[in-house]
Image: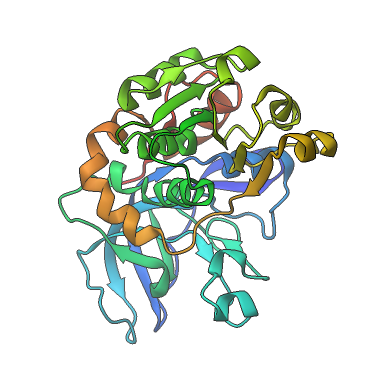
Length: 330
């Protein structure tokens, strides 16, 4: 089968490999139909930070169809349309026992600790698969995982119904966060991104307003979802914001950042980390049919598995006008 394989930092190859073995008793074999390229995929490719096995098949945002199930699997049958939960948790640490799988002390992700979705087929533990609306396009279903991340970020920010919220970055997490924020009448959504085409696309779909990151444009902001992963932006942001603002950080950052803690104290600005998601994936699946029209407008559907390296390069260079590139795998 065809797969995109990460052999090391900066070394991504499209190869013909044998189909996966299995499924084992508690596993499911699925045909991947669509998979999204995530910022964390790009971060791992650029830095090698989470390479724990090589070569491996990246991709943790994907949807497809069940091909076969292990003897002990219940609730899934061949033909079911499913999405993957990206989190590979241990189930035994204190965080897992408390149901906070995203804070597992041994947490890994599909596409890292096991092969992921940039391939024609994949075998995963049945516990990581959820059925979705059978009439939903696979390309839209593949956005369930980033939608769950956006739901978690918005919940961590906890904006009021009439707040003005700034979303920095209009990649898919920023775009989906803006879309979720805009579902509340009376709330104002501001969007900032160096890629004007992408910011404009998100503003059109959400009714948000594109702004520059400067103090005059941010004077009414009460909350920020920071989805760029830019350490330089995060370093300067507190000095541009009014007092009392909470910044929910959901980007994957390249390098360290410096912030004068006195600014945080004097202006009561809060920095809140947002890692993956907790129990939001079922809610994301329930919301997808309602939001599918707007989400479809965020998607670049032009790439197949053979195009993955070129798509990585295009996104890294900031040349894509789309919040999300979807790889059509089937």
